Amino acid sequence: MSLVRTVRQLLGGAAGIAATRLELVLLEIEQERLQLARLWIRAALTLFLLFTGTVLCVGGLLLWAAPEQRAAVAGALALGFLVAALVAGFSWLRLARARRPLMAGLLKDLQGLQRGLRGGAESR
Image 1: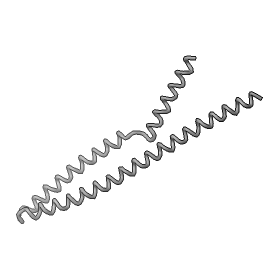
Image 2 (image 1 turned 180 degrees about the vertical axis):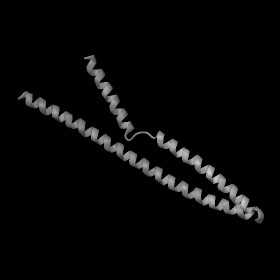
Image 3 (image 1 turned 90 degrees about the vertical axis):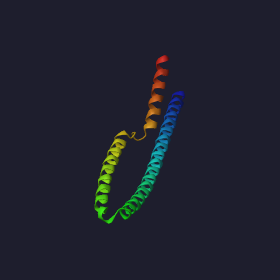
Image 4 (image 1 turned 45 degrees about the vertical axis):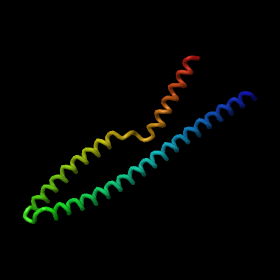
């Protein structure tokens, strides 16, 4: 009878561990989802404000320039926007390559737990 009790206790412990890991995975997914939502909202707001400010600035510069120089001012602004777009594109590529993997925190915690359990088992 004690063998059955021991097996049940082992299965109960394994189920508890599995439930805890599942909760950790779900929590990590929720945190990733919230972080992604925050990033999208900030990116949309930033792009809207940048576009609005750019349009107003370009309009003001073209109205400020003398009529015979407006074509040169427009060309210089276009060149400046192309350079800025290239810089921004390379910045986005750098960010995309440097992003951390999904559930990196959970994986780090689980690896630490495994190292701790192995160290505890080896010392016995």
